[in-house]
Length: 407
Image (cartoon, rainbow, N blue to C red; front, top):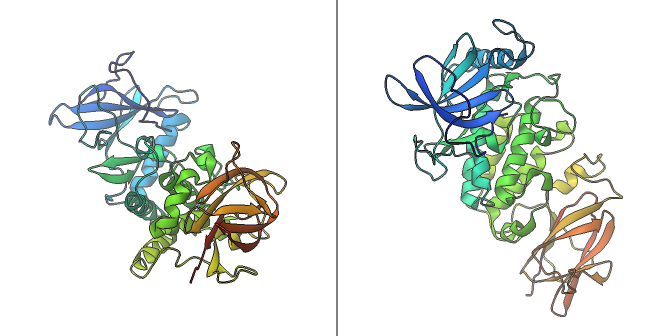
């Protein structure tokens, strides 16, 4: 849909559309359904963002009932019919209008990427979650805050019987420092039979764009926040695996993401309200959490003095279930995260120490890529102390956590 993070010329290459009461300054976003312009209200002088969609698109004649403008009108009408009050985590649409040439609607402008307010300066660039992610993963406290704000806005839509159908970082904007979900061009009534529409890489495998599809997309957005990796890398953690071992909050978010992104829609949260309740419930437990607590534990077979083997919560969700396209089939190659407490343990699979391409040993925390998705006997070693963690199927488990007890 609209991508406000792209670079646009400071001056439009064609004359700005004319809309009542506003002077359109320059484009700040572009998408298949239209352009978003930075604009000045001619009466108040306040800056606004104005989305403009041509009425003369293919398939649209006169007042459009088909084509992009028609879809936008339908979606915005649905939104106004169902959501009767402003919400702090939904981008505010202040006015909808039409000229002979265009449909337009007026919105509050996003902050500048610098963190300051919107301005008419040529350097102004709208602050979106996508632009924030260009610098890598967010801080744990930011991940928690923005996850809650995203889910709060989405839960408000779901409570009104609506689905967004295009949840992604480019559609999460910051206004006054607060995350707001925007771009309502694909909003529809919640219905599991809704056709497959949206941004492909954020769609669930089943293609049913209902509340559980919004949950799936929100899970992937939160994954991008905590990992700093593109959505195509899910569920790999890369360098963030090290911080996960030290941050209970990131561990809680990881577990939330795994359930939200289940391939079987029945295993996901029913809607954003249930997902938000789970997030808040886990946050309420943080006072009693310690690193590693709250994880699902499995006894380490044959390990003397081992406290436990903690396997990422997703293992029991995926066992005996079909693997979706985002997870490779059993004969494929996969990546697996290894985390131990304390760090710097060597890794052995079926008795063989795992070495990097340069011949040096992998030590925890790390991600090992290109492993056959098979069952392995996993061992960890601290110096001469080598302990078995059990037999683990990498076709279903993507992260292994192990704690040594030296008492």
